Amino acid sequence: MDKIIYRVINLKCDQQKAFEMFTVNKHLEKWLTTEADVEPRIGGKFELFWNPDDKENDSTIGCRVTVIRPNRFLAFEWKGPKQYKDFMNNADPLTHVVVFFTSCKEDKDLNTCTEVHLIHSGWRSSAEWEEARLWFKKVWDTAFEELRKYVNSH
Image (cartoon, one colour):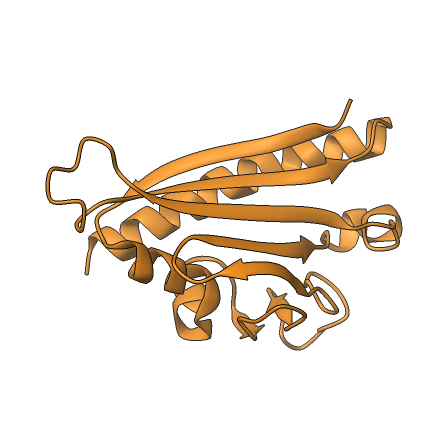
C-alpha cells in the first residue's frame, strides 16, 4: 500500500492568494525555500533550492508541474535532500505532491479563508523510504507553520 503524507491548513486569505503561495517564487522564498524557480504551467519547472550554491543537492531540480488549475489545484514532482538523494531522486516515478485549495466551510464571507490540502505520495515500502517519509512529515509540518505565519501576518 502506498503511504502518503496528508496535511491541511486554513489560511486567512482568498484562494488566489493561497494558490500564489505555491506558484509565485517570491512567496515560496518566504515560507518554503531559499530560492525558487517555478513556472506555473503544465510541464513548467517546479525547482526549489535550499542551498543555491549547490543546486544539485537539497533541491527539487528537474521537477515539473504535472497538473494545474489556477486557484483550485496544483500537482508537481518532488525530490529528496542529500541524505535521501540516492534512492528518492532516481525513483521512477518520483514522489508527487498534490495541493487543493477550497473555501473554508465555516467562513461566512468565503473570501477570507482558504483550506489548503496537501498530499505527498509515491513513497515505497523499504526502511529507507519510511525514514524519508517520516522526515518529510516533520518538514511539511514545519513548512505549513511557516506558511501560516507568513500569510496570516500580512
